Length: 409
View 1 (tube, one colour):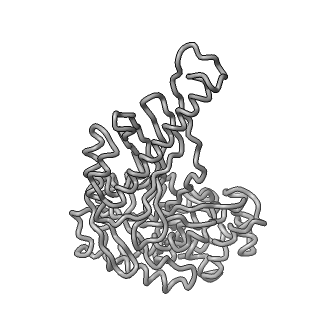
View 2: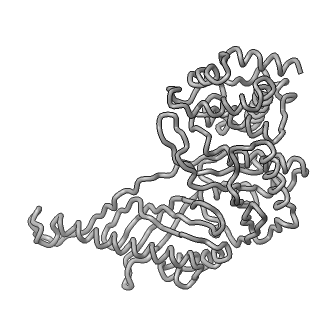
View 3: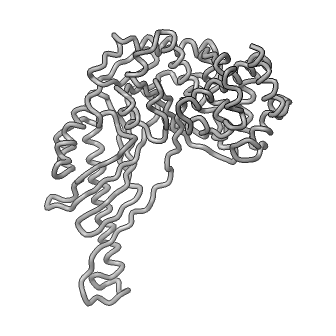
């Protein structure tokens, strides 16, 4: 399954509230407690908080447990020491904590913070949002708590170890031996298979892989990806889009999340298919419009990975259609048998398109959703126009031909 996150790109201005002295004339910039003084007081707190977060980011990047804990107060200090020690082995780079919004009230502050970090050897940076509570102490501002239900960093879940192969850097819980478990070999096999299927586009030279022990940890590491409990791996890509066609302007970060409890139970062929499927999403991310229908997104990855589910689709023809899967998030909102039916039908659709129009025809349809001249938002109407433009047939005719092909075996 493909995960696609759109980060907030615009920083929000700091807003603060400060107490004033009684008896001040409103609007007088020279009197204590005036709006001007309150603004200056809030600006001063904002500057101090930004400096605090800069020290905090620098300490985390170095894995300096003492310096990191020194930016906090109370119980947060214990959590910080552990987090910094666990982060040290991961070789972080370019750690940054950016205030997106703030509410300063006297000696307390509540901040919404963008937490960014990179991994040495991997392009891009990874971003998540934190709710931070800070308090003004005798020693200055200190972090009282830092919380996030999802999008947590790996070092916040426990101790991870770092492994590396030719094309991958793998971060895994210390109690999971990914080399002995064959994951590095599975990843390289999937990378090679993808290269054989596509001359362009290609994966990045080196890709980050996060291993989650189970679905609970996978859910904690990701934000907007639903159905994590049913998945063995997830391609988690953060992109910036532009224009009405929602073309990808840039790929901010990419990583593959492997759910070890599910992945390790698969046979070797299935593991290779899963890896190839998710790497296909990653490779196609720069060419994937935010308007591409779910059946084409998933169907293309199923086709490239050799995951032929036509026989399964034959038994489910009354339950699914391309029109029902026309929105990009249509499959993500399904679960259980309904989701299985959607994957099967998407697989059949992609295999049929490749047989009838060639792999080039499948990719032409994939790409046409980037066309600015193809107007409209994601959905059935847009898919009709895209199919007509790329393949020269109507969506209705394509669906009838597809269903005949599936039924005919």
